[in-house]
Image (cartoon, rainbow, N blue to C red; front, side, top):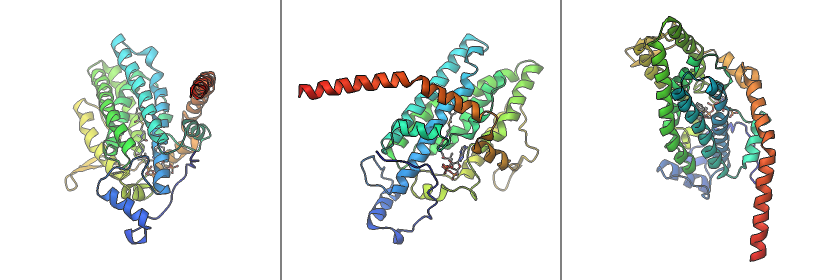
Length: 330
Ligand code: BYC
């Protein structure tokens, strides 16, 4: 089994001239738009980068069930409860496709879980914030899933086949998630003053953390250059963040919400919004484990893993018994 260490590759991007013949052939394949499949030769850095990104993406989907799952029992109507239940189940499904895609690179599900629980592997910073009111469920769907789609649509064209194919299905579902979130916000904004205030308060708390989802600014991004050369990423973090702001501001205005950023201003020349400085200190603190809900989220995942031990043991015992029977029959 390929033992993964989740850490930055930190390698400078090699030019074609500096590459070995194998690396050059690989890069030429990528440049020609040919997908890389699990049994193809690939540089170790490519494999490591994909395991890091796909496994962290999978962990984010699974941990991401927790803030919204918190509201399933308190959804305001039966219809909203059914929709939220379906959405949270979709996130579990996304996690599973992604773990399977990562497994094709030679890392086991147990190894990936161990890396999450030991803190070696990250998950998205956004899921370390609490869901205090029903409007937070609207804000998550609208902003968090909206940011996720912005980031994930280009990942459908990722050079690694299994990741790219998983993203196609995930994006279809994320699009429904984004709409259900916006529909909640729209409904609240048609409500009374207290409901409108609740929606505005949710936007105030989720706006900046949603912008942080895109990762550090391009100047500080460790992996972007190499990941873009390998066509794992198609866009930089800042490019996608800008697209998200440009798409979301008119949506807020349309329903009467105000983006909590005094520096937000349309820039005619660039054809996009200028926006205020992100609090990178907060981002780094959340990544270090000091966000409002980091401890709670990890405890929930640790408990789920421990509680499921009997089930995994049962499955293994069954699989071993079947394998022994098959060998005996041959
Ligand atoms: N949070 O060099 P960079 C969802 C880390 S789930 C935490 O720019 P990269 C949903 C980064 O990992 C959405 N860590 O990295 C689910 C790296 O650290 P390591 C999740 C972050 O990989 C349920 C370091 O910072 N989406 O939608 O080139 C309900 C330097 O960054 C974050 C994905 O995972 C962050 N926000 O670019 C609702 C998408 N940002 O690994 C919704 C797939 C950065 O060296 N991932 N870091 O220890 C990606 O596209 C890229 O990995 C990122 C970062 C754009 C996130």
